[in-house]
Length: 158
Image (cartoon, rainbow, N blue to C red; front, side, top):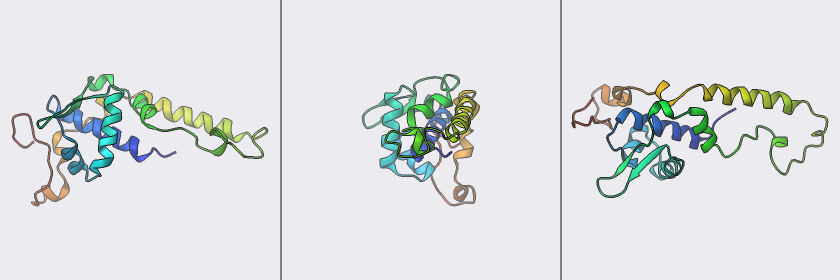
């Protein structure tokens, strides 16, 4: 199984916001940090805001921050909120055309595997995967080239 890029980015946004603490994080800052599309991140942040994982502040000095404590953000719930479906094979989806659906035993095995995957995610929270601010300094910057970095609330680099 593979998560969509959307879910991957949602988890990354939450990790970055958790590392920033109470400081507002911007979409631009996050996009630069991860070197990913700003437009795609806007969609991710919108969903995370609508589902109550982050709260946004509009305006020139706006941004977003976690809406819940990291301990209260369950990874399994985030993935369920961001994945469009868990149709691993055709027979899991609507419009199934497979000719052996009625007698096939594969869906039972795949469903068990999927349930194990989701159950594992449900055992963890954002607090279990939070990084330190220095983990967000790109390799190029740590080798002397300037690049994006996480700024502490005091304005100093971490």
